[in-house]
Length: 479
Image (cartoon, rainbow, N blue to C red; front, side, top):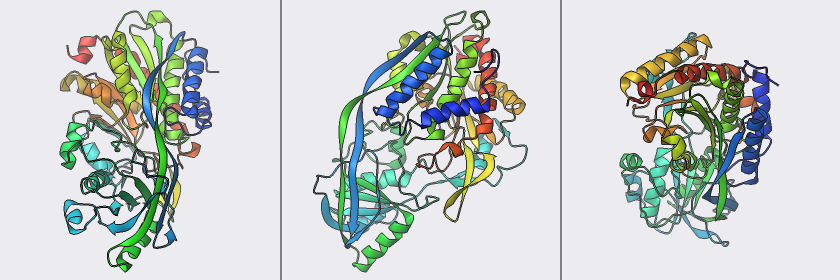
């Protein structure tokens, strides 16, 4: 057990991550999701927090049970694309055609109606130095970020566009080749803005230039880059087409998941929320068992602080549905808890305490450094945000949180984190996140957690929260 007045040490926080990891994949509405919720409740109660509840809400749980692909008589290893449509049990038997990167011109050059579309999926290159140019502050005393770049494997804009073009052109299915993925993995679980996410944001629709309503969803599969190369060869050998059989069966069922909410009263009614999401694509040690464990570390410390020393009520929030299609957990909390959100001064979100790994000879190799990370800061005005960033920068230096950039929320990136719903609702935020290449890969195991950063990150945010606890709400919210 940790001691009163101390933040839990690295090995204790890592132990919490191990326990959450042991539950298995934690997609919303699954047994492992429920185990994570119950574990969080139990830990909070062990810390002495008595006002803890699980708030249920309904979701549609997409679950695949069978998938397969055969092309020109060759069975091709593959994986399902989450939240796409299902085939019947008999599958689809038709021609496969290749549309390259899936641009408008690619689709105009090939008749895809009734066919399986093969498209190369590309991930944009993330250059940390470019982010630093937009930031308030960079802490990189060893100068490791100047030439850092890797594929942002958690976004794939050309697939979002190609998939919807395939639907508009009445294709039968889409097979995405993970052309830029660092390894030959095909089990990538990225649900964001998938076809089940009917309410696509206006900014995203504008970016891809497509309507939100399309004439029905179609099935989707992933293949790795090696098998994708072979499929392109088979299509070319067939004069632009190859006979294929594709199967993807499963169900979309109503299910229940929960947000976990714990209230720690202070001397007043103003509220600071500290949160992360508890679901994940796999067992997922970094995404986001590490974020859950960090919020637990903050909760344990704060629960040992005398109420007389806390001016604000602190709400610890663990949301779900980050991996259930649209990330609904935050929005559900905001909509369903006006008693909290009407007095909310600040949201502090902590996600992904990750190690940096490179790929050599197809294998992940630990660089010995933390993954580059960002903290998005948003306040009631630009001036307030800069002051908030300055408060955080002091703690970043004091706790030596290396390879970290503090960014404003009003960059072209917006706030691409689990704090997005708070940001878009106008609340001030601090949102810590990193984006390792393996984030949605089943290789996100315990060895990927930056264990030596667990206590320093929690400690830094505790200090920031304590400083913000003394702030007048108008000095943060700007009104």
